[in-house]
Image 1 (cartoon, rainbow, N blue to C red):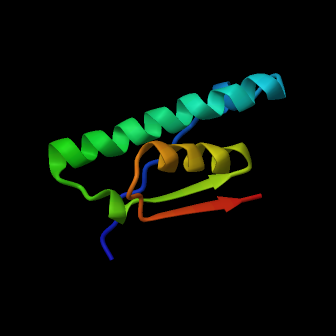
Image 2: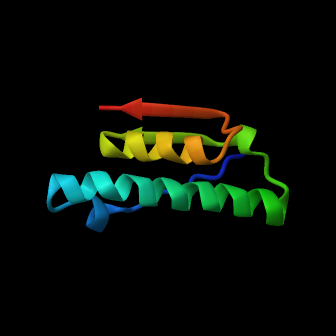
Length: 79
């Protein structure tokens, strides 16, 4: 199967004070949703083909992206 994998490195946003990292979840989710929208608009890529996988707070960021961009195919959260 031909796939593309995009890694979001948000170490600088997820480290430090936990309260700051939690607040950054919304920002990361918004940026991920923006990226999917851009891929859809510019390349005709269907959000239904997107699978977000997030670990710990990254799972919350994936969920936030899904909330902001309806139609995401799958969201997996791990701990």
